[in-house]
Image (cartoon, rainbow, N blue to C red; front, side, top):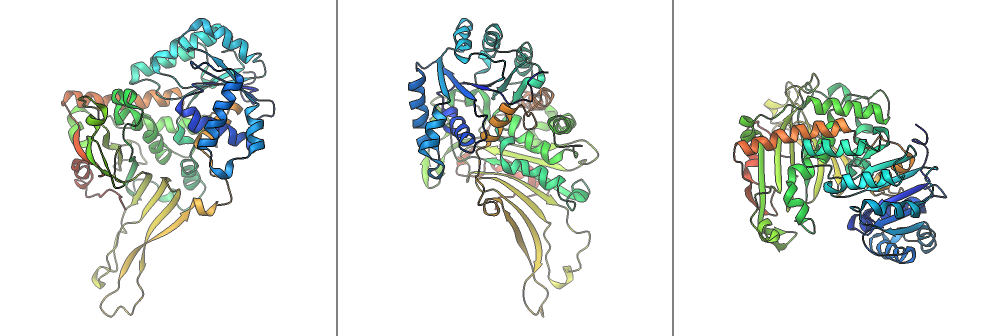
Length: 489
């Protein structure tokens, strides 16, 4: 289709005065501008309900950049030239008639328009209708959709059907910002760019895989959304399952959007549904109570929310991928708020050596572990066994030692980009590799819905856990029943 893989000449930014725009989108777009990566003539039109003209919005954006940009990225001349790209049109996304004025402000889109849309699911229908009626959904227009894309399979299908009335799949870019992280992309480089991992990257070589996304924050300003979503929908249904797919997928034939997303979709279709009778032993839910995080006393979820709630702020799941490569290998997923430390990582525990020649000499072997840390640090670590120095008259002594590859240190001279920089640039250029396809989303929701149905059938209520901990004790039992310990070091 014409213009799909050509850089867009214009960008339309919905929610242009919101927290995401201030913290992430405007700094990301500035970073791309400062490095000369945006098309020279690209114009950016912001829109939201707030009343601003172009000059007001440029001042608003300048304040956001000064607040959220690192000091070493601030350049007065580059900020000034970036602000000159910005325009603004006040608009209520629910007002279908108001899109005519928005289209007038954006102007001619024959040179390509990219739209970034972050909105509540209830607004998708009026937004898509408004864009189509105003001529902002033609063949030269592509749209980026920020989550939440529904709350279950039915609502997700409804949103996807609505979007499809105006935007074909090759012009629809579903955003999962985790896929824009450098370390996440490094999972593919690690697996498919090195020959020594692939022969053991399977059920014969790997004992279990753990994926953890732990947050120390509580509700912050997301109470109205989060209490209706919970940890399963907010984190597992997108970020965690995407990480699982990158770890578990087969090697794509080539690095492009179609090949990579084909392989991820196969993983989602291979996820073993968790039946209602298995939910009590294969899932754990929790809700944080009061406690201490980073040395500060914090309230529990209910006190923070200000009303009773059974929404889960923690979830742990034992998952299986039923295919040839992964048969019998458990994938343990864990995410929660108000936990001990902020951490996102993947820990791959390999099987022990089949026979230990050291066992009668006092040497204790530990299975090798590969740790891929996504945040706050970015590194890849392999835990290996090594001999301690000494004469070994009383038996050989072995110790587990880390081999570290710090991406922060190894690429210290390279700018560490916000995930949205890569995703916004790909949206502008029309590259779908790091975006999520419809069949992926719907396969994810199918699996998630089965878990929620099991919770309902078993009248599952979240177990309380103190803020500043690793979640309910039942999460420890989830792995220890299999002789496995969470990688918490």
